[in-house]
Length: 179
Image (cartoon, rainbow, N blue to C red):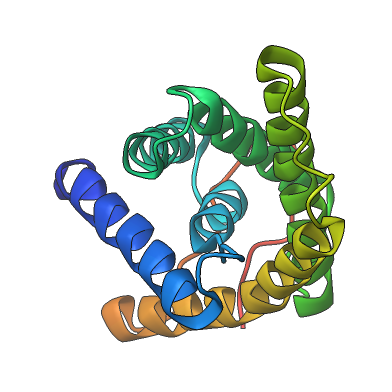
């Protein structure tokens, strides 16, 4: 219950920190979306209801604070969560190289949907400015993902004395996350 009460508060902190960090380091040209990594982490570790709600709230907070079209990133984050959730049922999602590649794929998915939306609805050509920025952003976020997962594992060990097991999903044959 406490998790659900604190989730909006920590979502605001995460979005503000990631935006501030990107503005200070890259003068607003790159956005390191740590929130996407958090959504992917939720897809790998949470059950469907808890993770979907987390992705929804994180996307909604991002929409509200970033000034984008209300609902765009809410939809994208829930979609990324569902993609992560169902992929984690079929794949061994504990390898760091897999986490980095999967995050790269999810960031490209997010960027593609956002570019497609702005192009179809508003007629903006977001790729005409500098397509290298999107590639650099995706690579940097995918390289940060294993660090985020490792930090979350350390936090789990600190709080619970051992890494938390992945959500039990009946009939999946999934290998639990144990070290």
